[in-house]
Length: 336
Image (tube, rainbow, N blue to C red; front, side):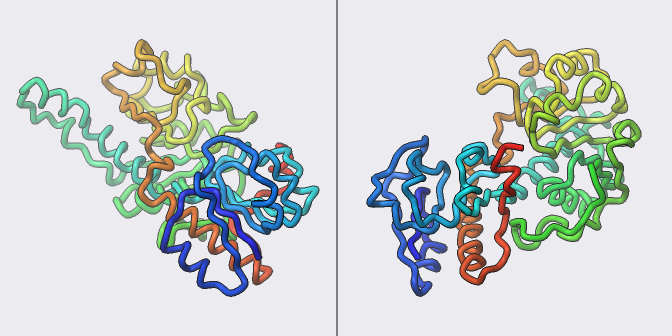
C-alpha cells in the first residue's frame, strides 16, 4: 500500500507508520500551500493521501482509496468527483476542540472579571479594587449553541468550574461515534448538559444564559442566524463569545447591540474581514475582547500531532475494514 504525505512531518507518528508491514511511504519535500499539480509518476500508485489540498490532477491517482485532509473545513473536496470513484474522504474535525474550548473559558473569566479594564488601569497606574474585578463564573449558565466537539469540550471544562451548561441543538443529544476526539476530553456520551433546548425553544434559551457561545459551522442555512432579534433577547448582564465564524452574527446588528449596550460585552475570535480594517468600531469598544482568529489554528503546537494521529488511526481502520474517523458523507462531498 502506497501513501503520499503532502504535509509537514510529525516524526513520532511517521515512525509508527514506517514500522507497519506492507507500507510504502512517500513524503513530498515541499508540502503544498496552494492547489497544484504533481508529477503523475509520483502519485499514480498511491492508495492514501494526507494533505491540506488534493492535487489538481488527482484524477491521475487511479488507485486512490482514501484522502485525509488537515482541516475541519472541506470545501477543497466538494464536487471533486470523489464519491463517483468510491474514494473515502475524511477531515480533521476535533483537532481544535481543546484550544478553542480553552479560549472560551479564558474569555468567560476575562469578561466576568473585566480583565481589559484592569489592564487599562495598570497602563494608567490606577489603583482600583472595585467589586467588578472580583466576579466568579461558578454557578453561571453557559449556553452553547451547537454541541459538536468544541461545544462538548467547552461543556466539560465549564462543568469542572462549577458552571451550568445549557445547549441549543437541532436534535436530541447522542453519543458521538467515529469522530476524532483527543483522549480524555469532550463529552462523548452527550450527558453533561444540565438542560437541552431545541430550535423551537431558541428564544427561551437566549433569555436564560449568562454566556452565549457560538459553536455551529457556517453554512448557507446558518449565515446571519443571529440578528437584532436574537441579540435583544440576551440579558443585559450576558456576554457573547464567537470562536466559530464571524458571519453567523449579522455585523450591523452586532455593532449596534454593542454600541447601545443591549448586553454586557463580547469576545470575538472570528470576524467579517481578514484582517479587520483599523477603522472598524469593534477594535475600540471597551467591553469587547478582540483576538485575531487564534483560538484554534494550524500554528497550534499540537496541530500536526493530532492531524497525523487521525491519519494513522484511519490507516489502521482502513486496513482492518473498520469505520473511518471523520468520514464525510456523499451529500457533504457534493456540497448538499
